[in-house]
Amino acid sequence: MIYTCTLNPSVDYLVQADQIKLGDLNRAQNVSFFPGGKGINVSRVLRNLDIDSIALGFLGGFTGDFIRNELNKEGISNDFIYVEEPTRINVKLKTKEETEINGVGSYISEIKQEELLQKFQSFTSDDYVVLAGSLPASVSTQFYEALTNQCSQNGSHLIVDTSGESLKNLLKYQPFLVKPNHHELGEILNRTLTSLDEVIASGKELLRKGPQNIIVSMGGDGAVFINNSLTAVATVPKGEVVSTVGSGDSTVAGFLAEYVKSGDFLKAFQYGVASGTATAFSNDLCNKSRVEEVLPKVKIELLDKEMTS
Ligand SMILES: Nc1ncnc2c1ncn2[C@@H]1O[C@H](COP(=O)(O)OP(=O)(O)O)[C@@H](O)[C@H]1O
Ligand SMILES: O=P(O)(O)OC[C@H]1O[C@](O)(COP(=O)(O)O)[C@@H](O)[C@@H]1O
Image 1 (tube, rainbow, N blue to C red):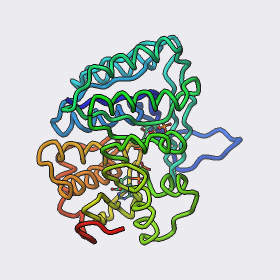
Image 2: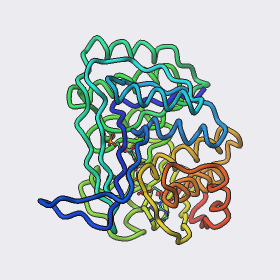
Image 3: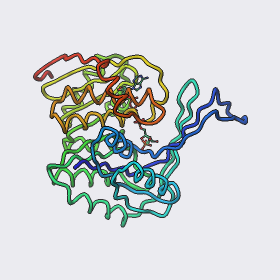
Image 4: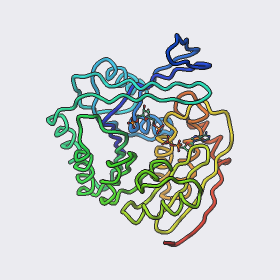
């Protein structure tokens, strides 16, 4: 089974406007609400790609109810732990540019954290566990580490999509996959990455710190895949970018959807990148027909086979 775990879900409030002036009254042309947060997005894209998953994490209040109802409507199994404070609302402003305001997240008591950790004890080596997104302010990075440690003890395939200190601390558990974007990769290694060569070299450096497979996403410039036997670069087609919210999560979901079917890293990488791009070209997350339309336009260049250092 694939489990996704979102410690800090969100209702994503997407506001489209010609322009926004700070300090002025602005009117939106269009607004929409989506269940959000990285693991939840992965579960939603997996559903669109006909793959089952179980969504876990913390939800609370009217916003938490909205997310649960939407997931139920979409037929996504979920087993969230309920907390008192409402789940955050993240504002996504789409003008000519994209601006995001992500909330801090609800208070999660230690008892609730322990309850989630217990759920992780039942995972097995057949399971894939996607641990994704930020931590609510009340949850320490040690908790992420405890969840990771539990997956490692169970032998589950762990996919981590987080950034900064949380990601750094988890590398030693040798996660099956990590997916930083190029800014996050630079941040972990304390540098700014300005070229593809730098991204590849830094990705290889990250690989030596523990993860088994790495996708470094680079927005409209595509992505890089690195493991001990392969290095590949994907370029993506140009198209009308509607909203990139959830593109990275779609990359993870598309990769997993193909990997659990074929076990083929390159096919999975191409499918993941196509899913990310299909989401960038959509208002909500991608659907299967969009992904399959984009798929042949994602070009994969294999740089090295067999490692490379
Ligand atoms: N402007 C864009 N045009 C085409 N594809 C895009 C664009 N932005 C993002 N994507 C797709 O989504 C993937 C993830 O995007 P990225 O912004 O790197 O991730 P994150 O959302 O995690 O920061 C990219 O690798 C690419 O496939
Ligand atoms: O937990 P964080 O880092 O605040 O991110 C949460 C936000 O990221 C998203 O999951 C989108 O992520 P990506 O654009 O990186 O795929 C939104 O749904 C949500 O608002």
